[in-house]
Amino acid sequence: MAKEKIYTKTALKREFGLTDKCLAYLPPADKIWYGRYKSQRYPAWSESLIQNFLAQDEVQLLLVMATKRRAKRQQAAQKAVATKTNALLAELADIKVQVVRLPKKKLKRLTQASLDDWYLYRGLNYHSYDEFAYHEATDWDIVNYIRHNLTNYDDELTRLANRVGRQEGFKLISRKIYAEILKVYPEYRTTIEKQLQEHLSR
Image (cartoon, rainbow, N blue to C red; front, side, top):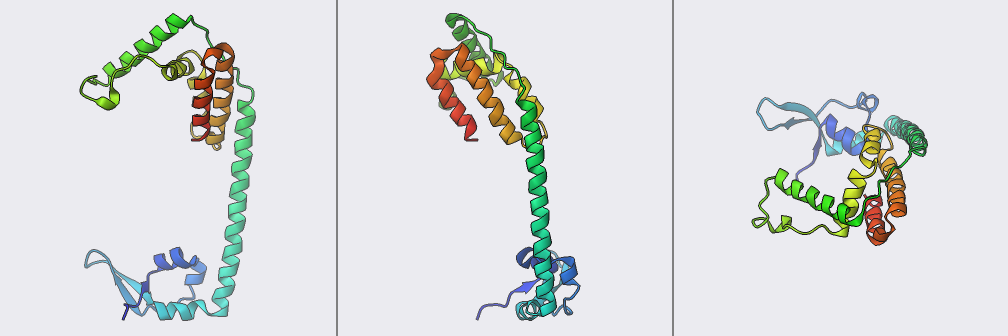
């Protein structure tokens, strides 16, 4: 025979959504819940007692009212988030993207130097870590270098810190930055479009 389940006040709130007002109607506890330590003893209620308690008309009414209040709070919270998100997006709509055009050879040289610095900064041995194996700069690396070093991308991202709606803001900035990179470096269209899709999927 399965052991009867018992509930503490915390469990009742979690499993049935009971509020403090509902808990005020609880009958006297008929069980004791023991924690990890001997000193941890909390009042608890048997499953049969709780089922009878939940069946009371007064409790059912309180639960209905609590559900409605919870729904209203959620709607208010969602509305507040939407308002703040829209404000952030309106603010970001005016950003001016700057992209510096460099000769292809110089761009690849600077990208390679940046990769080399990345390895050296982390003290990685090219021959000891296959996952960090040294490689010549690819188009993907070059577009990354352009985004972080030849645009105001990183500066714009700082505007998202601790802001409501930063995920949507990040996507808006990404669209604007990559669109301008594409105008200045159309030869990297395939890579630019792939990176943008990756950013938008985050």
